[in-house]
Image (tube, rainbow, N blue to C red; front, top):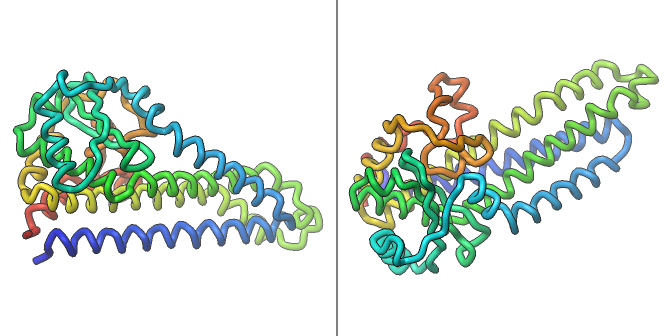
Amino acid sequence: MPTLYNQAAGNVRKTFFLMFLFSVFLIFLGWLFSYLMETSLFLYLAVFISIAMSISSYWFSDQIVLSSVGAQLIEKKDNPELYRLVENLCLSSGMPLPKIYIMNEEQPNAFATGRDEKHAVIAVTRGLLNKLERAELEGVLAHELSHIKNKDILLQTVVVVLVGAIVVLSDIFLRTGFSNRRDREGGNAIFLVLGIVAAILAPIAGTVLQMAVSRQREFLADASGALMTRYPEGLARALEKIASDPNPMSRENNATAHLFISSPLRSREKISWFSKLFMTHPLTEERVNALRGMRL
């Protein structure tokens, strides 16, 4: 029977394997487009754009996300019980206390953001505070603190930059590839067609890999959060309640859906094998079974 420790270690290995696939795919794509266009100039441009995206997302992504979901900063006097739960979990795990925000939403949900442990944020909905029992709420908070402690925020930034680089490479190739000298000479028409197909499909493949990384990080945060509270059943029950709640988010946003503990896009959830490739979260049933199948 798997323990919380080897479950977390296994998820870390899977995540780094997916990151390796990301890097290999990006290098291959760069080589292919460079060969077809006979210039490396667009690669330098893609790197520049990726760095610019990385810097802006690293420094300002938390405020952009908080603003987009209408989250409001609270102090200890505004909700002493919530603050005590977060404080106790931070003390037990040796983490600094993050800022705490509340979203005025009926749907129970939560997310963490920020560039590191010293600049982290946890945001919860009013629905989460009203509908979960104490042990369940503690499980959700531990899950979000685990995202911060496991440096998921940094990892997600890297993944977004890699996907962005793939999109930039593909877009530049499609805009300039048709006037490429190899095409004019008619030397490698089939190879050029393959390059165009790769440029169209590459962003889709990159998105699939991004979603796969996101799902693995959720499994890891579940395991780490359960380890933090020493009570996996609390988080398992919380996930069931969150997933079964019918209330939609008033500000649904595909760009931020991967941050939440459970996808807030209730009206768009599907379970076909194809749609699973584009899901930001594992199925709730899989997460609950993994938690209840573990032992400390």
